[in-house]
Image 1 (cartoon, rainbow, N blue to C red):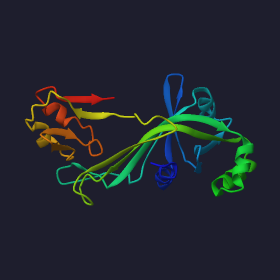
Image 2 (cartoon, rainbow, N blue to C red; image 1 turned 180 degrees about the horizontal axis):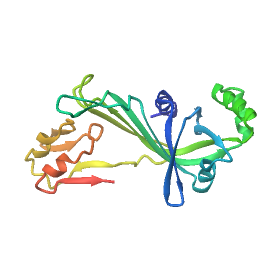
Image 3 (tube, one colour; image 1 turned 120 degrees about the horizontal axis):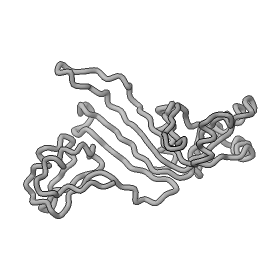
Image 4 (cartoon, rainbow, N blue to C red; image 1 turned 120 degrees about the vertical axis):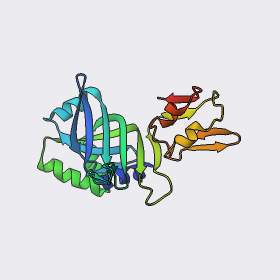
Amino acid sequence: MKINEIYTQLDNIGCLTFTTIKDTYPISRIAHFFTFDELGLYFRTMTVKPFYSQLIESKKIAICGMSASTKVSKNDNAMPIFDSGYTIRLTGDTEEVSFEYVKEKALTDAGFALALKDIEKYPAMTTFRISAFTGEIYDYDFECEHREHKLIRELFTFGKTNDYKYGISINDNCIQCGRCYKKCSFKAIQFNSGKYCIDSSKCDACGDCFIACKSNAITIIN
């Protein structure tokens, strides 16, 4: 995915959870991005906040958000029903951006122009850029209202290598018994060229195939 596409997905949600590290504990708060450019994604905070000191100290951040309603209804069997939507998460490296950079970008970027006005109004405000990150969009339709399978997952990277992988795969121990295929409710397992394989873009990593397999043919990728 391109940086503008990632920003659009984040901006469509608006308020997101931003998590940093204080000593050995994660600390979360709600914030948002205000723009992007070819160098990364941008957000603001105050220099007097713990958020600022944690960013300066660790230079790391994790972010997540959800597009759909967080309220969950239930069916007649008391099972949860989720409206279709998507979640997005990313983990990356941050750096503080100079006021001069914001001023220069404000000449041609509306997001930076609004940020400049905000900083002039609140002098303790400063800008951060996430300059390198990995992440995922988890587009779900558990009731299959809009497509025939529940899930589309897409991994993305920016400013980092593209070897970011995790999930579940089928290894050479597979005896083609079909147990995993029958158990998978996400329709992520396919039978191609005489063997079973997992489509990672549809896989929820729920573990059903791992439990069903009797031949140690499921590999967990971290």
